[in-house]
Image (cartoon, rainbow over all chains, first blue to last red):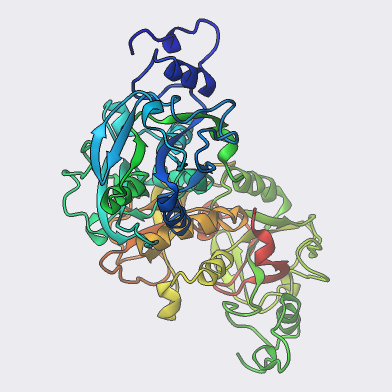
Length: 270
Length: 270
């Protein structure tokens, strides 16, 4: 976290606006987990207009892995519903630029590759529901261990839309039974950030052979008396884009999310 | 079901009022499961005034096993909030009369033993949430098999109140993981009829040694890929009364509930 003011704010916690400003001025280019507590962070996917319609339908058809928080006009880098003066070209810490499914660069802004046919999609992220779980005193092992959440490709197919298809990717958190019940209640209230779990208890029933070998992120142990709980994961749309190999795409770099002006507490259905 | 009109209504389904009228006129004295679909059924407990205060505090302290739908004035057999012209002395199919914890008689009305110091308690019943689960196409094995739900005394203590204390009694339903998630959502909305489950998955963690040997009701098999799901059960207050051995008490006979004018769908929190 070189040359950043984010951790040093003497009076108030940083807001989503603060994080975006630090990213835009290139004073911050690291992971956003834990920054701007209370603010919604989102996955970013940017596609050319002639791929965007299929992707929008893919998200609509698969709302649990792909809950849309915002979609831009073509060529317009603003998303006013998600943030004041937000510019998706500069306001994330780091990006990935893809051509035909191949990673080309990982720049800290995408001004030089911006095009007037690009549509930006912001998709809800598990950081929001993890904040709600922690506020309910439900311990999350990957956070306690300081590692990434364990993610797995499942045998559950997404609903395809045009050129986009692929397996549902899930994240797994081991929880005690009483915490499973409370976690289902808490995340049910949050459909715009993946909502309720998709499975509990039997990894093999959803095509996961070995919980110790996640397809993404880090393995965490499951202790006696705990159940593995599986949520739909925002890596699902990333994997669908990688498989579809559009000629051009931009995504956030892993862990380097768009921090919005929305508040996590305001996402709750009730 | 001798000499009853309840099953023969040619035009409309029987209401709670219909069932109570048939009970009062002694044309019906059987189990109420499945009668008056959509109407709330309740457990009945009647105690002398000098025991009623402790029992009210016991219910207040243990709302998951003892969700109170109504409490009468002492000596008054009506519960106007639960039913038009309801009379708890005649409107259930069958009763149990207890003295010092010992079962004395099982009459079809309690007119001859009524006293002017008796307080009636009506406690929510799992029939209401089972109806909601079935409406959500969640299969319930004990219903499919035509037997009683399996119930177990746990190692979880209730909160004691005066002379009332004892273990939490739970009912168990085996469900597939996706149905577990949906069942938690559905029953969370229904706190007045036991609400969300209290445990999932590990019977031994709550003091149940053998699911094949329930303490009340009938065992049902758990199939591969299913989890046992445990709800707080209305047998808990019955067991607490049996243990406290008040000099006089009246309860409903097993399965012979009070059918009210309340609608199950109206119990839902949201």
